[in-house]
Image (tube, rainbow, N blue to C red; front, top):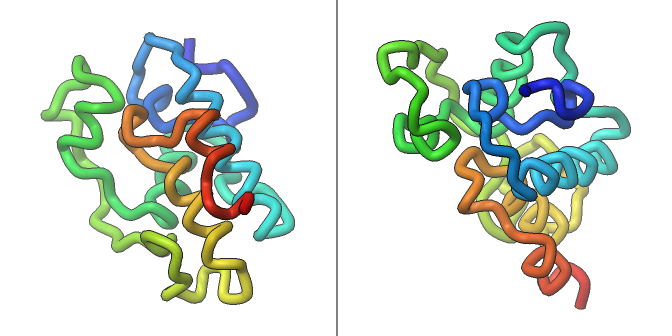
Length: 135
């Protein structure tokens, strides 16, 4: 079911009707908490699944068709009708946007590697603990 956790921490693959619950869903929730630490409140606040995915898109940009397939290979590609929005969360260990201007670039890098559309591209718990932020 898609109602595994509070909506603001819910992984996007659940919005795309994935039914395979993996630990990568939990890692998404962890990434949301990391971003909440920077923001002072949950970043993906919404009152519906549609509004939730729109809030995620505002930060991560529009998912590619490959991202949607990675989240749920059975999701009908014809249903793919999302607004085209450029990502606000920087890639890598630079903070080249104004989303979190005073954040530690290593912290942003850690969060960015966890909060990714494709579950298999998210850091695992062990990989997150080994991230250079914790050095």
